[in-house]
Structure formats: C-alpha cells, structure tokens
Amino acid sequence: MTLTIFQSDEEFFSHNHSALRTLMSEAYEDDFSEEDWLHTYGGIRFVGTYDGEIVTHGAVVPREIHINGQARRVGYLEGVAVSRRFQGRGFGSELMSTISETCAIQHELSMLSTDEFKFYDKFGWRRFEGKSGVVINGAVTLTPDEDDGLMYLVGDSSPSEEIRTAYCDWREGDYW
Ligand SMILES: CC(C)(COP(=O)(O)OP(=O)(O)OC[C@H]1O[C@@H](n2cnc3c(N)ncnc32)[C@H](O)[C@@H]1OP(=O)(O)O)[C@@H](O)C(=O)NCCC(=O)NCCS
Image (cartoon, rainbow, N blue to C red):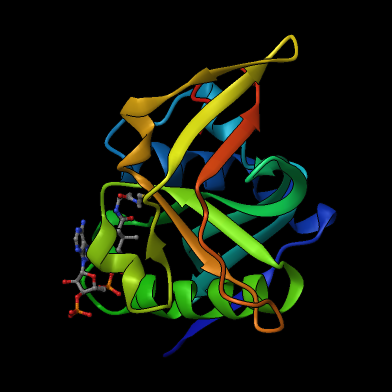
C-alpha cells in the first residue's frame, strides 16, 4: 500500500468536503478555525489517500503580498495536515515534497506560517528574517508577533532574494 498524492478537482472536493474538514479538525486537535478552513480555498488543494482513505491535505493559495514594497503574487501554504493515526510514517514529508516542487515551479515566491520549522526546512523553506505586516485600508500595521513564524521558498527560476518587508492584505481570521 502506498500514499497517493494528487491535486483535488472541484468534483472530488465537493464529494469529500466533510472528510477533509474533519481531517483538519482532528489533525490540529480542534485548533483549526472556520477561518483557517476558508483560507484553504482559491488555489490548488493537494490530497493524499492511503488504501482509499484521505490521510493528508495541504493547499497553496495565491495571495497578493507586498514584498520589499512591490506587490507580488505569492503562493501561500495553508492547512498542511496528516491524519493523526498516520503521522510519523513519512506521509507529511511526501506531501511537502510534492507541494514544495509545485510551489517552486509555479511561484517566484511562496510563504507559510508555522511553528514546525524543522519540518519545512528540509524542503528548501527558509526562515523569514524581515518585518511582516498587514495592509488595512491602505495603511500598513506591522505584525511583529508573526515575524518569527513565517517561512518562504524561492522559485526555481527566481534569483535568491532578501525579504526585508512582507505585507499581506487583510483577511478574516489570522492575517498570516
Ligand atoms: C506536521 C505534520 C504535517 C507532519 O506529518 P508527518 O506525516 O507526521 O511527518 P513525517 O512522518 O513525514 O515526519 C517528517 C519529519 O518531521 C518531523 N515531525 C513530524 N511531526 C512534527 C512536528 N509536529 N513537529 C516537528 N517535527 C515533526 C519528524 O520527526 C520527521 O523528521 P525526520 O525527517 O528528521 O525524521 C503532522 O504532524 C500534522 O499534521 N500535525 C498537525 C498539524 C500541523 O501541525 N500542521 C503543520 C502546521 S503549519
């Protein structure tokens, strides 16, 4: 039996919405809000199945983020999870390997927010060392509490760059 990872289409998603939503709540031990779930919409949804059961999920959603003062379309990673019963078997790594390859091909820059740094750094994600913020009604409010949790991945064809500032647009729930 092997893990099969694929990009979910609308039909798969609508048939399996409730199983995916349950997987998120269970993997995050009920620390996954409705806003967190809504943040997974609008991009590519990666799903992993094992013996017919949905066991992994992760989504890459395009967001406009102002990087060093310039508006950029960034691939933003949301809702990475492995079903609790299947954690520690390498499924999360397989998922992140696939997602990171896609991010590197499709986006000059990708970002995520986490406190599981070691999990992501072996796939090329680097710690953000700049200042983060959110744009509300055209004005930037710094989000210093978020700085430490942000990571980024530079695209395959992009020059390495130093990110001094990253300002996202406002959204319900966590900005980052
Ligand atoms: C984090 C998560 C996706 C990892 O999935 P997994 O299938 O258990 O991970 P793997 O078995 O592929 O392990 C990958 C590596 O990460 C490490 N790891 C796994 N879970 C970890 C965790 N919670 N914190 C830190 N490291 C972790 C493993 O020790 C392993 O290290 P190694 O490669 O040096 O041996 C999974 O534990 C999960 O869904 N957690 C709850 C939700 C969550 O925290 N998501 C990420 C938040 S941004």
